[in-house]
Amino acid sequence: MFSARQVFGAVQRRSFSASSRQASKVTVLGAAGGIGQPLSLLLKLNPRVTQLALYDIRLAPGVAADIGHINTKSEVRGYDPTPSGLAECLSGSEIVLIPAGVPRKPGMTRDDLFNTNASIVRDLAKAAAEHAPEANILIISNPVNSTVPITAEVFKARGVYNPKRLFGVTTLDVVRASRFISQLRGTDPANENITVVGGHSGATIVPLLSQSGYELKGDELAEYVHRVQFGGDEVVQAKGGAGSATLSMAMAGARFAESLLKAAQGQKNVIEPTFVQSPLYADKGCEFFASNVELGPNGVEKIHPVGKITEYEQSLLDVCLGDLSKNIAKGVEFVKQNP
Ligand code: NAD
Ligand code: LMR
Image 1 (cartoon, rainbow, N blue to C red):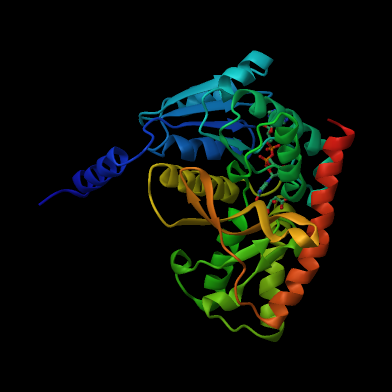
Image 2 (image 1 turned 135 degrees about the vertical axis):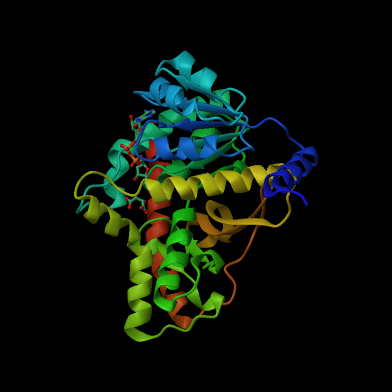
């Protein structure tokens, strides 16, 4: 009889030997923050990560020293906030996760973060375009609906934009949608996978419950949709001014990074919802849109269409597209005005 550890080890060795890439450097920009720290911890526990590079404007070497004592194989290094520190941190990265920026306080929308976070993301994107132009860039900093287009514009201006490698992380919306339906129906959330499309803020978050065979009606449906769309506000209120979701976001970010690594290492049928450059609603002013995306060694492999939806879901989608197109245009305009 084999022990569970022997079996897991054997499976892992097989998947690694079948992989196209053996060494995976993963970088976190904003690594000392509320999301950055638990995200870095989860990445340190991931055996697919071989090098973990942590950058922040404060404390990154300390966080790296702490996480670096965990007895998994990956090498961890923290970098000081200098141009050379940032350059070295980024260089050779397969994945760059960006949770740098300020979080919301009660009463704020994600768009209220634009004035502060747009320039933070723009500047980090400039560094990534220069030092890690081929990496998968995962944007967590809000407002995601605008920070992703900002990153795209920065990469375009430097002639290194690859739309298959830029992702807005919307995984938390799907995590919430699955958790909330399981709470309503008493199911195991691990078996729920509710499709969520659109963007990542309020009415731009569109859960497609009907696609999972659920037929909620009336108030129950409206309350469920509202909870998914405004789940972030629930956490912001509960934290009472001390920030927004950090721990659930760290889990969601680590899940998305793991999916990209699996896909890069040859696993098929890796599908995650994510906010990417998409043809689905480009004619409605939404050059970026979140839907289920199949991931592969080159990043985006296939963008799945929204599929069959109810009239009610279509009405949600119509509202989403109106808001989303404005958020996207705002990001693009920001880079034009502030290159
Ligand atoms: P936080 O304030 O706890 O941490 C942010 C970190 O970014 C800090 O450590 C700060 O020093 C660092 N930072 C600021 N400017 C930087 C720069 N120029 N370079 C490097 N690091 C820099 O905030 P948080 O709770 O971790 O949230 C971070 C962002 O993530 C916020 O914008 C928040 O709205 C967003 N967020 C997104 C999602 C999502 O689903 N995409 C979920 C939760 C939070
Ligand atoms: C979330 O969905 O939790 C994040 O976007 C943070 C926020 O501001 O709500």
